[in-house]
Image (cartoon, rainbow, N blue to C red; front, side, top):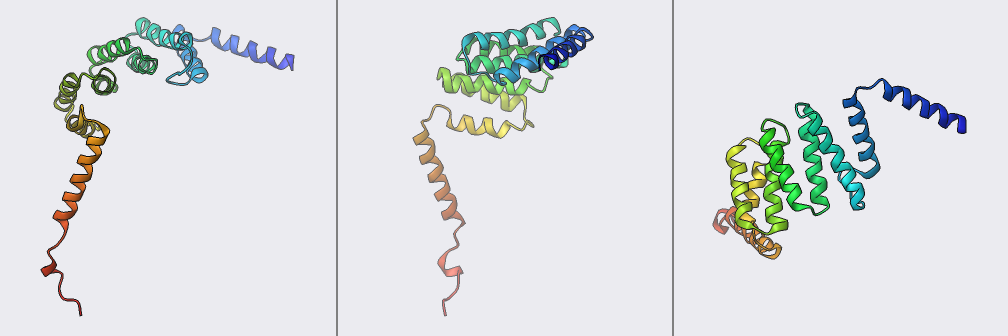
Amino acid sequence: MKYLFFILFLGILILSSCMSPRDRMVLRITELEKKYGNLPQQDTNQVKEIINAYQNFAQRYPEDSMASEYLFRAAGACLNDKRLIQSLELYCFVENEYPNAYRAPFSLFSRAFIFENYIKDFNQADRLYLLFIKKYPQHEMKHDAEIAREYVGRSIREMLNDMTTKEMRDTVISLKPISSIGTLD
């Protein structure tokens, strides 16, 4: 058994020595993600470790296609750890520094979500949702942003009452008058 672990360790050592520094960083991040999950809910040191790995990669390889992805993941890990300011900063950075990246629109939406659900600044959340709708009119999350704007700042009870009222109104509108049904024979 010891022999097997030695061979495995030697194999990993040989493979890692043949890897580029970038690939070693990606491998390290992958290991951390497997160890802690994509959005760790572990202790603060584990969260810091994975956030630092994401940020170090992006700082060292800012032009790499994974830089924006890793920064987006770092923002999510910060949010998960209730580091709201750091999360907002990272989402904003992704949106501004990588405007054509896949994660840029999601970063803007996430900022609005944080203002709405964590900070409770409903005016700022509404402005960000509106900005999202204007900036990304064809995005898959546009409808979500529109709905979020409709309900921003409202309690769950208010939303449910409104949804129930709308559903009932739509049902009544779709009903045909009794005279058009015909006679019962």
